[in-house]
Image (cartoon, rainbow, N blue to C red):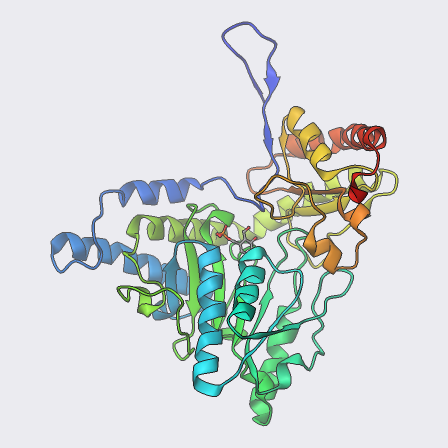
Length: 408
Ligand code: PLP
């Protein structure tokens, strides 16, 4: 598809959005649901407009609960995935310390900053961090005995990595916990466990009750819902001392006036993503594989995305190229892509995920993440695949011209 301008300039090919792991465009269903809900007022109000707002909020809660396999009371609407991670990890840790004197926190080095920073904050508050080892694909060790001691206050693990797209062995972890619970002897089955499922929800089926964990975080803008709208699933019996204090809304876990408009958008986007999940999965995988094939044809490429992985993710490194050169050249060519590492400062640093996987810093710096989604077309994938060899060659030439910056 092309766009033409009124000033007779040559038509430009349309821009391609290939950064779905950062955020997905709003789904039409979410736009419509939020438009309908836009005039709603205070859902806590004991009057007609309050009841109307509350009805929309509770309907959204029921819909989310049904889709994610839990009870409506276990759905907490939050201000973001980050907020859901913070409330869960800190809240479980604080309650474990208060109730059992437990002070150890278990997590791996490949987590998103929403988790890494929560864990680090806990260490400033007297908790001890225990590192959960990962293999060269960033997958945690399921045979670990880190979860087997009484002093673990909270353990946390992401479902899908935001950079590589690689899925964690969540099923193996939860089966092991269930086995320990059945045996009734070990603490391992009952350690408060949080899953950061921000990249997974809306892309792979999730059944919260089947997981047997205490909490799970999701974020609407990753599946076509509004930004700054998260979901925290928290079991009824989970002991959580929320770090967020206030009016006690959302079971006392997320104080603050609830947002029925956002909740309506969250539920509509989640329902829409479940409706087309299977067909999207197959189509997006095919397009991603087409781009991956082009990347694999480039000299000395390293491919970090390894199955089982999210369908839209392709995370690679081209040693000799700088990640920021790769995305700048793609940007000029009309493609929105990313290096993958969560960085708000704009400085290209080696990804902490890749270095935790054992990737040398100079290789990690040449990372490129292309993430496709339901809006990606066959033509988009063909264009990205066609652009890659030249973009990498130019970035490598620039890398040679400027020398090795990694030692500066
Ligand atoms: N966890 C993971 C794995 C993520 O990818 C992200 C966002 O990129 C977050 C947490 C934070 O989500 P939000 O942007 O809703 O705060």
